[in-house]
Image: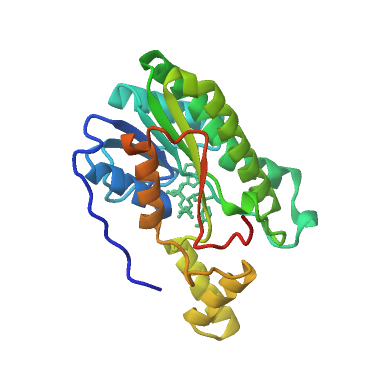
Length: 266
Ligand SMILES: NC(=O)c1ccc[n+]([C@@H]2O[C@H](COP(=O)([O-])OP(=O)(O)OC[C@H]3O[C@@H](n4cnc5c(N)ncnc54)[C@H](OP(=O)(O)O)[C@@H]3O)[C@@H](O)[C@H]2O)c1
């Protein structure tokens, strides 16, 4: 892997902006919380487990894959920050077992859709009306390249939920653009998170190989990553910081892929 990147940040760019980042205690979400906070935003975030040291001003412990959890988070964000100007829906992931389509029960399908689609749908429904009243706001939905390049061994339901999230994001943009609210999606490929590094270590231990070989094995399974490495969470956070900023004021209803070239087609 290359060295973790460092970017120059305008520490006033998001001054006065109130941001909600879901799933912000680990991985990509944590990098997004940090990136927006050092740029002056007041950030609220959420996770199921208690948070350690975070750059966010407000932490709400809740399961956003449930309606109750989404309502708790939305109410806490409105009470604690007085409203939300920017939402980054970073929460997501898959817990499906291997074994292809036959291994996925109804419950697993529902769980994957609850976390990867409905968490965003519910929080948007609860928080967008305030944005509409103010006539401004910016929303990013974190999808995945699996919505276009689905893997079948264990993540069919995850890939389908992310496809639904991308479609939902586009539809929402059509309704909200005329009301002053920008909506975009970001579709990452493999990201070098703590969790994905733990997976590399497990695969290396299981195969009796080293971490570099295990990392290459994952890239081979994806059909190769032309830049030769996963993205750093900070690189995904940088893209999102741009998209929610005024620098991207004309970008709306778009989906940005950040995958080092993994998707092989135009
Ligand atoms: N990692 C990748 O290679 C990759 C590739 C493509 C797309 N993505 C997408 O990028 C986003 C971030 O992924 P990541 O891998 O960086 O995440 P991650 O490291 O697994 O972190 C997930 C975060 O969400 C929280 N979380 C998980 N389930 C939750 C729930 N039900 N309610 C509230 N919080 C919850 C976690 O905290 P708790 O566990 O304490 O709840 C944690 O803070 C996801 O949407 C994912 O689908 C990731």
